Length: 178
Image (tube, rainbow, N blue to C red; front, side):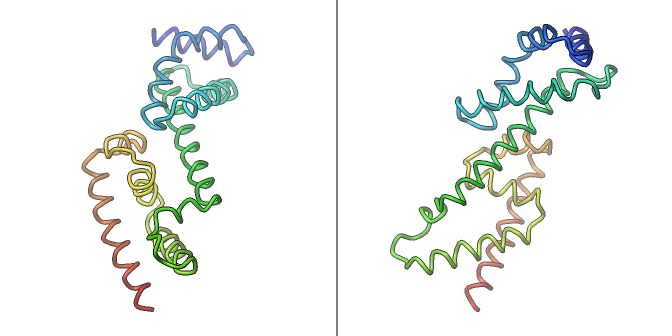
């Protein structure tokens, strides 16, 4: 089947739309499973699945036929899912939904200050570590899902999260002292 997937991708590179349809039939269930595992929302996964095949169509001319076609497609799916999570995070932030996780007894100005402090403290973390923190604590992904998404061993993700939380605590405590 891997050979057939590579063959379909190489045909897509020549503009063969039927090859795209055949590739979709061969791989869409597995790609959808990857997207569901990361996004945990059927509608978001369905939207992302369309984007996966659009990106595959556009990227087919640069595909190396000596590589594993299914792994190439799975990488596209993972990246599309991560982009979707980032967009969701941006929408949450723009909608002010971060306020909802704050203590409701605090004043609005205090809540805004906490959000600003949290943002600045997150910015001090390595980008990958900050992504892992947000995926686990804001989006509710499991450590294993984050490890799979980032292509990193599970214990490495655990270490990143532990160290990142300690850094965040230290940063937020120093922000409180100001």
